[in-house]
Image (tube, rainbow, N blue to C red; front, side, top):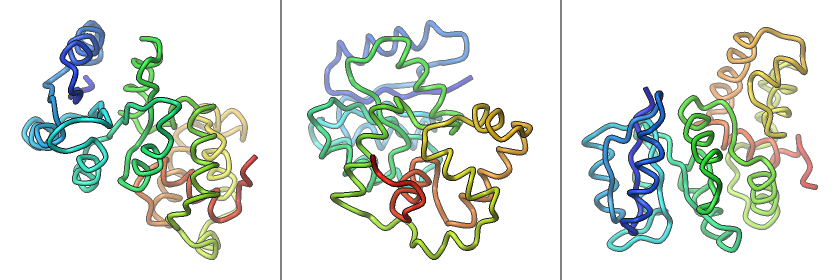
Length: 215
């Protein structure tokens, strides 16, 4: 069961998301918060697997809250819109695990929560890829130095390249003709060797190191 906390300053949004998520057999909403301060407190009290984090909230914005939760065992799914790319860049710096368009269809929200919970892939590849490409070109964060890629084996390097293209573990397994469990092992080793938190940082690292070229 995936435990979710919904953080948004609009009560109707919180109730709508909560009702949709709670209707799923594999998801349960354990709490909600109307501002960033409450979100951090509730995450640490309730220990959810995923928090849906709105950016614009009173008391403390969602980006600051995400930054404060960077060392907590929770996946932060930032709610954003196309015209808020600057916020997404800051969310990357803060350690967000994924992004979701706030007005996305219900099916995308459900898929996003499941994807982030299992750490299997980035969300909305077409959106995320564009944002990360722009981010790396304009505001590099230097998650990992290019030379660090030398620690990876040839297979691990190929896996990192495919992660950056938005492929899930299952898709990578099919592409490389490997067992999915083998791919999971490769992904874990890539993250460990490069000192990365999750797949979101792996994608940034692939672009910043030149392994994957924007555009």
